[in-house]
Image (cartoon, rainbow, N blue to C red; front, top):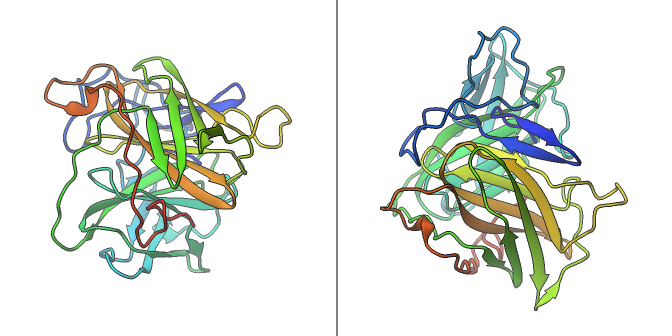
Length: 321
């Protein structure tokens, strides 16, 4: 997958680089120095020298492409069809895409307090309309991210838009920073830390019943997918691990290793998708890069994250399509 904050290749894996910018919403740390853009979105022809792009997902429009939600609100009951279009140069719907990780487009849905994460794969009609059944667990303002690469374009884009789910919004505080997450009987342990301004090696190890899981199954061409969102402005990145299932060198667990470049201090929510026994599950973590202000609890010592309860989206509380 791709982002306009630009994913750069790191050896066998992909490193993800957030470009610094003025955040939308609550700031998560001091304004960082300008950072280089991602190589995957590195087509800067026509840009002024030293011009910096915003982080991924903060814009509804970029480089002549625009995300246009056709559904005005999200359902908190039974799933309803959510539709949108991607408009390209000339304000015409984009109907041809380059497949990335087995899909033409990846849709991420999350509430603005970073709860209710979903990773979906809509279907495309001939007129450029994307459609997917969608329900969210609770009312609130949600951010939808479309991650895609138009056919003929050398790099990808991630565009974002807010869509409300009507009702009594009860925001949740960001869970404390921790290195363990449990989901559907699995325990995922995070090793490594985010370092602003440097490459960070993160390994997420999966176990069940106290035993390492060594037979993870490929999901969208990889053993794991990691999405990170920055608290406050929801700057977006999507990383994939070192190696691929068919390279003959990458083990199928228990550890999945990622490399990430995070230039800004702040709190991030990490979402790891992994597949085992024919089902995709999502483990969630709060991670801190650098030192944030004293008025936030995300700097608390690592504690295990509580296991998500059942919901209409399945035992792990997430939807994967």
